[in-house]
Length: 358
Image 1 (cartoon, rainbow, N blue to C red):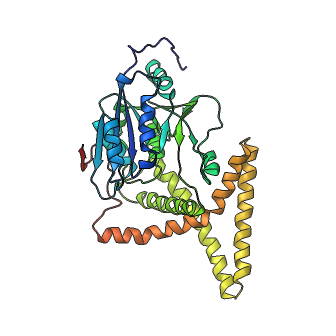
Image 2: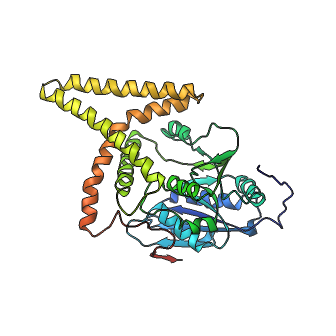
Image 3: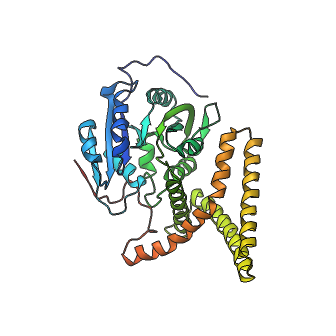
């Protein structure tokens, strides 16, 4: 049973470290950092850290006067996981809120989450939902992938960011820095396997800005997602990665690859018989049928119709993610020739880091 207590005052709220990471986030960074100053929480009990991942813009210059600690990563291929791990390592307090420079954190979420965690020792992390900045083109569609339609509070397996007990993160050695996308999901799976509980509250964590205002950026994002999925697939075979995250992702990846290879073979068969147009039409028809099936499935679960439209869009862009998956193989070969190991042992908080505090 979850206990609640509304008797907190400024004197008995605990200290919190807010860790914001970013790379070339000058567009949103100032507003992101200033939002912390406006929180409904004792400001003297908030430590604000910014971890920069080799930005080439003026992100560091923006951050230095607004934060308690500004950290610059020097590694050649920094990841969000590495930035979070460094921030966790350099933070001062037991509670840490992890976020990004493209997010405006909610004014009230911190207080609500901390009160809940203070009263319930069996809650090791609290997460909520993200709203998307809908002012720009494709963001209006992508916004719906961030929203939660479950109105009640409940325990969940993955976080998508949130407020954590630092001792829990240290025991798990933080994020897996080899994962470029989906690191929060992987951490959530490990937390569940080690009996650490993540609690979802139906409250907005903040407003995120995808910054996708044209079709080219949308296609590029789908391409990058394909690369990330391929990376996780290869990681599942290297570095003693035996947890459930890699096992489940491997199954999903293999299913998607076989599905797309099947469509490719159909197209090649038609090309051999000089029927390229017919083959292409069959591939398009298969995608449309799959998209309609996904839409109906979402609707039967009582989801918002706009979320169903997002599912259709996601399926139609599947070929782009497939191309990204294949592109990862020559990328891996190039990195190997440069001496960069993409599939070594897990790197976490305890791993060697190359950074400086400004």
